[in-house]
Length: 330
Image (cartoon, rainbow, N blue to C red; front, side):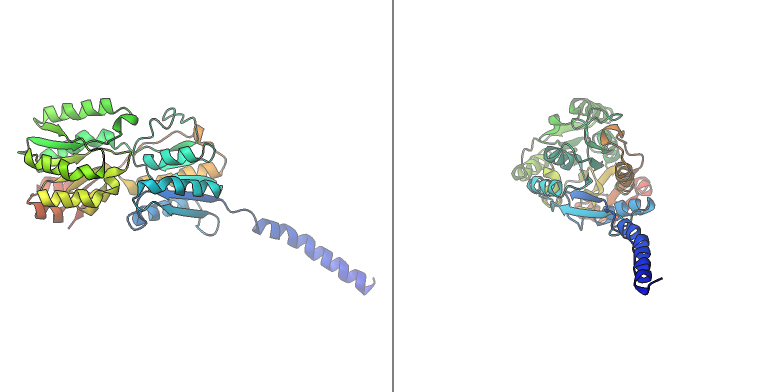
């Protein structure tokens, strides 16, 4: 055979084997968006749990999955712009940190799958837990249902307490079924012989007045209710500062409040919730539709106690409560 023809035959054979391999290595890597209301520092542990959940399913960030992280840095007004940014990137799915974030993203897209990683109820955003119906699924927070349990824990910590102030969400009636939740909380308060005082707060500017009113009324504790607007979350430091100033214990809905200085929090275990959110990413990337993926609810819960704050405001935590605490902040 002519040397030139032999050379061309060898090159053709080489290219025949090379091209399929090249096409395989250039396969599109799926990309998901992650929109968080909290700062990256505040969500560091939870983000690690989410990535751990992905790794358990065979996804390694930067290798076979890409994640576009966006943080509103606890500024609710930044969420729409960040949501629009992720939509323009045409990501395969958007993971949200809480129901108020999911609500914002749902206004930005009705086609990109939205996966909620706990943090509030999805009622009002989906048709039902069993069949969400639209482009939103994930894990619902269960936070409102835990308010009676938080009140019971307050009574254990402060057995002589007779009055508790409640900070409801300014927009609570727009989400879920607050009427039922309010009745459950009031019934629990009646059983515990606790008088509930509702503090009406419509904006962060009204928080100092609310705490002053609570102090004047000699309330034994202030309990935060789930807040889809994000006002309390975004003004957590102010709430804790006011708590210390007036020496009134604050009970938060998530451990982030306890970490920041609230006396106590009781919530679904967020580490477990964020790890489980990865399973939704996996199912959607494999072709599942969010409308057909049932919304799950938390199965593990966490009690956090801040002993440093207890000392500052003169509260002694009973050993029986400390023994049950999943997290003790000293």
